[in-house]
Length: 216
Image (cartoon, rainbow, N blue to C red; front, side, top):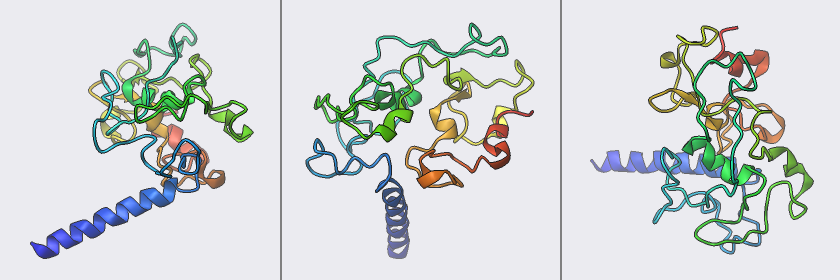
């Protein structure tokens, strides 16, 4: 039993250190920001206690960041593309909303842990210009559909979602979310983009990532 506990501890430390190394020094490293007085790496997104359930359907673990401040959402659905036959949610699902609570262009990144800093908004002059590409806003019609059901019986150009990993589709309806293509902790997974900024789950050479879902 002692050996088992020791091995489990080692594995936990290794996984924790891997995540730390992936976040540290990257775009999701907020430890050096003035609002982060304790220089903590994980707290801007997660907390071990008193986490925010973040509304119905959220699957972000132990969430610590404020909700999105966007007043409304315009989703990419069949009103913008006749090729979309599947069901699209009226607003982003909880998992994607967790991402959009920083990437909506109106919510402050430093609003977490019950505090309302309000000064650091992606794309604003308060942050480096390089973060502007990370702003998606609340009009999502110019981006890949999210919170959309992946049903190959409705759209035969899709692969069978039941054969895909949970890192690709989520929930009972097999929805495609931000995290279907991106891994927030930037752990590599084949991502060869500059400095891993794309946070892709796998290298998209030859459109491999796209072909996980699409059978073109």
